[in-house]
Amino acid sequence: MRIVVCVKQVPGSSEAKIDPETKRIVREGVKAVMNPFDAYALEEAVRIKERLGGEVIALTMGPPRADIALREAISVGADSGILLSDRAFGGSDTWATSYALSKAVRKIGGVDLVICGKQAIDGDTAQVGPGMAAHLGWAQATYVMAIPEVGEKEFLAKRMHEDGWDLCRIRFPAVLTVVKDINRPRVPTLKGRLAAQKVEIPTWTAQDVGAEADKIGLEGSPTRVVKAEPPAARNKATL
Ligand SMILES: Cc1cc2nc3c(=O)[nH]c(=O)nc-3n(C[C@H](O)[C@H](O)[C@H](O)COP(=O)(O)OP(=O)(O)OC[C@H]3O[C@@H](n4cnc5c(N)ncnc54)[C@H](O)[C@@H]3O)c2cc1C
Figure 1 (spheres, rainbow, N blue to C red):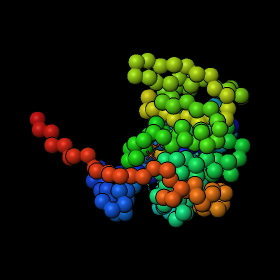
Figure 2 (cartoon, helix red, strand yellow; figure 1 turned 45 degrees about the vertical axis):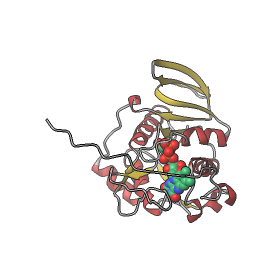
Figure 3 (cartoon, rainbow, N blue to C red; figure 1 turned 90 degrees about the horizontal axis):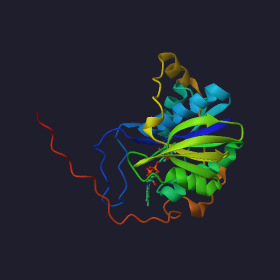
């Protein structure tokens, strides 16, 4: 079983600002952390590997410092990490991001399952997982709260709804997005953290994954951000 887990580095503070000119989040100078939902995706992938064997590959698209998120993934059980990083990816919207990530999955090859978090806490669209499934032409299940059964050719996914759940039988290869009810992520050990620092992380460019220039970056993105504002700050709670 070869599982790719998509992890995104997000601002670790609610003080991230939006650039009024570019309408993008200003990430420079803001502490970055792994998107919290991606920790659940990773944990589920590692549990499947522990049950059935195989390998878990963490994949991120971001600036060079996004390798920190991959090392974090390795410290809790991923076998390796791949950083998709190239100036040509800058300004990519969710369509272009999921296209680039799906090209990396194709390059990795032999992938049975891609697991993403439900959504990123900065962009918040929840579009990248389903976007990858569309680009890859694979089955997808979103808001997965449990994987009760995994066979050689198919698996069962329990999907959360506002008013209940459903159970889907899905054939590999597939893309899942998971909610935090699915498990309780393990905490990395000191040994795991130290070992992750030594792992070599390959960086793949747009050319390496065969991403077409007109499908990535700002120009390759069908979305145009007209206006973006941070939410109004809430008053501090008083007792
Ligand atoms: C016009 C436009 C320009 C933009 N320019 C930039 C830019 O220059 N720089 C920038 O950082 N953002 C930019 N963005 C934002 C960027 O498109 C989104 O952050 C990105 O597509 C992910 O969407 P999301 O944050 O809503 O993730 P969601 O769809 O909510 O994420 C769901 C899951 O998908 C996976 N995932 C999402 N993004 C990644 C990733 N990068 N790597 C690995 N896994 C991932 C994770 O598992 C995550 O839990 C731009 C957006 C637009 C519309």
